Length: 307
Image (cartoon, rainbow, N blue to C red; front, side):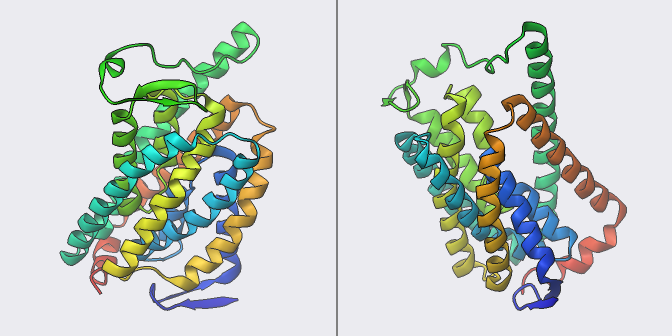
């Protein structure tokens, strides 16, 4: 069942898009990530122009994250105060990111930049997560019950001003680190069409010292608003949001997120992290391969980037 996507200007199988949306929704519910870091490259692979994939995927993340966060609200695992602080940073970051994206679209370099960003970020994050997860699994086998990842010790962060109490997370820290994390994730949301959960989740555990059970819900809460804002900005600035594509991905994503939230409660944290790391590295490898093996692709896509 082929469907024509008006903004992307390509025909794609509707069931393929529904399936992709569902798969990424499951990941969203399981890992507390928007899933954009996997979905956007998958859209590249099926022939969607990168500029359209980035802007439209930001839209799909809103729905799958909203569906996932509802499940976490029921379990009372969302730190709203922390979510709002991260959100303030995220909105500023998204506004900056969309302007950079518009600038690169104007000079026709946006597709190459997006793909390079993916290869670099997915490679680094995937490797770090893989090593950390392997160590955690090794330790849990050696010492019996699974240990929590080591949280940050008191250090330079405790000397920062503007301290605030985050009751749900049981923290009393400066608002500066969460604002910076939010800002960085906001820029990524706009340029890469990702919710930034794959950076946000490790940062919240290791940098901010939040309990793992609160991290997923809080990350999803922040992602909803930042990606929603990024989508609006893309639609009005770059005109690259394809609504037909977005709706098909949304339907799959919302259903998948509910299934993912259930699966996530049945697996151990280390198993979840190593699964995610393997997926990230696989997508990174495929993207790097495409960039290296088919240079002609860059020119053929780049020509239409500024339309």
